[in-house]
Image (cartoon, rainbow, N blue to C red; front, side, top):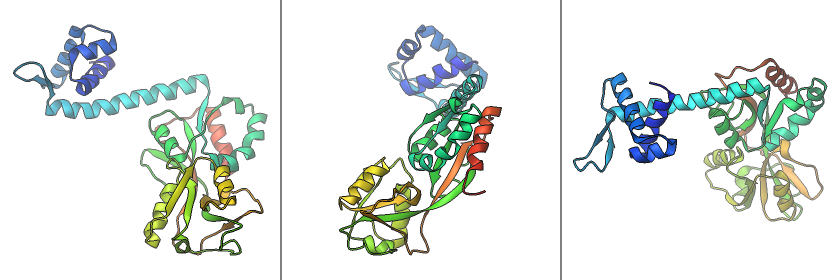
Length: 295
């Protein structure tokens, strides 16, 4: 049994055709058959059966169970390959969600340059939801990440950097413009502008919806805080945004919420629990944490 056997088997479970799998891997059909036979001997079971016409390949219950484990094994091998490659090249693939990048990265850029570490960072700029997926599949070494919970996934390790409030923002023609604070329920009949589903704002709005028992009317979603604020300034609707993403300008007003029971924007530095950092990667992590709100 070897890694190739596992790859052939996993593809055969999906494809259910020896010839197609052989073509995918550029090997002969007997190579795939022998690979399956090795696995069946190793586990003392039958992994595939054919119908009477021998035109259709069926995965046995044992085969289905093995594939669950093989899928996890192949994922871990891919993660190991990514991690070791990054260690060998002395790079840190760092996830950077726009909101947290705006707050944290300028603070550490000078220190990173002085310690000759800035060039070691390969930035990946996406929303926190997408960055979490990339952490879990091993594409990223580490990521700044926003969430509405302090800790979110059991396979990830979190260093808490701080927390922020979500706020409503309104244009100067809004009836709420002269207010200093607002109840979320007062926005029941308003049109909402916010970040798209790759950002934690979607989850925060869902939490607020459950608390206040109404579903916000979201008319536009973006991945750019400046676009949202510009549309609010044009009085298209009410923005829903983390306070740290705001830019001060006279034509919009930020309104914190009175609600005692409200979601928070938790800021974290996150990596896989099984990820071992190189000395330089650890220095970068320490710099980020050293400039956090939690000091």
